[in-house]
Length: 159
Image 1 (cartoon, rainbow, N blue to C red):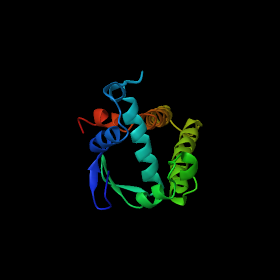
Image 2: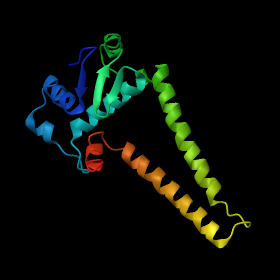
Image 3: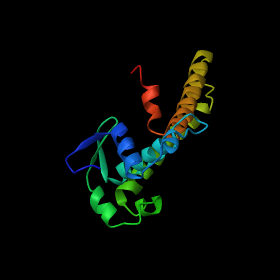
């Protein structure tokens, strides 16, 4: 589908993948209750995992280029599953980094929830608003990460 020097748009990767696995029109159009196309979600998660592993790179938003993916696929001819990706240091590092960011945000939210009696009422309100904003941000990011990558185009159509 891709050569080492070629960069492809995610929409082209969806189409090439659907053709490669010979999806019929009904399979290509199958929509999940969330409103997202099933096969695009699966391809999106695969791309995300391969990018985290270092097999693919994202030179621009919604674009991918192979780094070491062909070697990785050749060494696992039956397919790649997360268990295989977890053996790759880059993938584990990426997951650890994401978890560290999540924990740092959670710690910040907890520290903001502890009221200080040295603060004026206005400062306490400001602190409470910051805590709520941090919580909403964390919840929103979790929901966004649970969505297939194609949904980000809808969210950022005004960006």
